[in-house]
Amino acid sequence: MCTHVLAAARAVAVVLAPVLLAAGVLALPAAVPAAPITGAVNTAAPLRAGPTAATASYGIGAPISFRLFPADNAWNTPVDMLPLDPDSATYIAHMAPGTGLHPDFGTKWEGADIGIPYVVVTGNQAKVPIHFVEYGDESDPGPYPVPANAPVEGVGGPYADGDRHVLVLDPDHQKLYELYHAVRQPDGSWNAGSGAIWDLTSDKLRPAGWTSADAAGLPILPGLARYDEIVTEGVLDHALRFTVSETQRKYLYPATHYASDSTDPSLPPMGLRVRLRASFDVSGFPPEVQVILLGLKKYGMMVADNGADWYVGGAPDPRWDDEALHTLEKVRGSDFEVVDSRALQPGVFYVALKSTATARHGRVWSRRGAVFDPSGTQWTATVSYGDGSASRDLTLDAAKTFSLAHRYRRAHHLYTVTVTVRDDRGLTAIAHVRVRVR
Image (cartoon, rainbow, N blue to C red; front, side):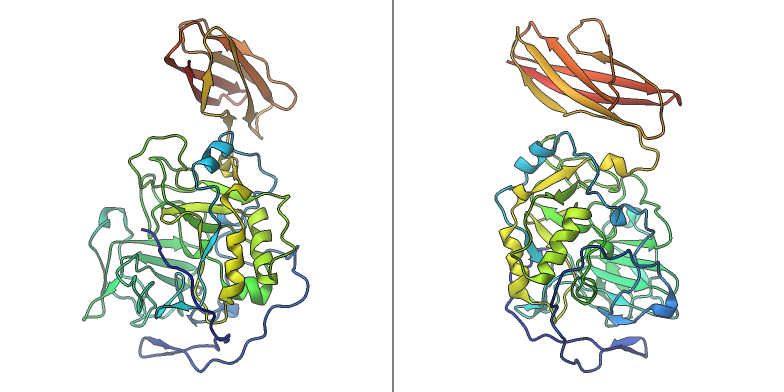
């Protein structure tokens, strides 16, 4: 499930007027000229309110004036103040750090809209049967309210047989319907590889191990950059989705699914959250790109699928300035850092410790670690160095950090260090480090 859309030529800017609903088919009236974003970039815009039918617009690519999912949802949670993942540097080094961001959204390229399109429907949109032909056991059964002319990703261009995502937003019922590999059938039903129905009022995840319309088991629409928010509102107040070429057989909250056979711990898992470094200078970029970059500093991006490295998800719109968007390519993977996304989980208690290390036999190996437990007040900690030596007590300082130190006597061997921490609530957190001794 990956998107491979390339650069597009700049198109004439237009604004989509409100749409009409007739005979189950959504129709767009003529477009009118749009005013480009100008002036200072809004750096402190408030979060938008939750979904309400009274403020909803309908149609293909209609503006979404409300926040998708609750304010405390992982997509809407700022990560600019969260701790770094202990393996941040390792992950970034294995994610093509010299590659620039690629806007996987824009106007058109070779006949197809650039990006993942969506349609906003009314609450009385007719529902049609959905036949799942690939991952039916991990899909939410239909029917889905998919209009006959719902936009399909890639149609009209050279990648028409690609992911073919279909996204349908029903603000009246606060539901989001998403399909992968969607193909409309002559009888009005749809075949699809997989599908998911999301309740916009809930933070509920997919069942563990389940995919969605995206490989990571995440919703797609909340992770797209949209013209109406970036340019019209001048704010990006949620995380974006992006792809990398290699992932590992693992997923991190809020993802629920992996799409790899690799057990290499250096590769990013699905759901990995990155943020643009706070020190990155955005002042030389076009205003709309500054909005995106400021949002990436505060909310970051999540690995949602396998695909081209650092391809950033967004929705197509004829008003995008493709030339401006492609200045994102000046931002490299090395300008990002990985957030410890475990801190996003409600009531989380974990040990932050880099997962791999190299030591010299006969010399002291050392490492620092930390405990994250907002609800606990007292802790006891022990460490086993995995070489048959007795377990030892660890001391946590006021910042809940600790130090490991050990001398391994045997060379050319792999040991597993285990740190166990218990808090006053009776909960236990465990972390492991694989230490290769040379």
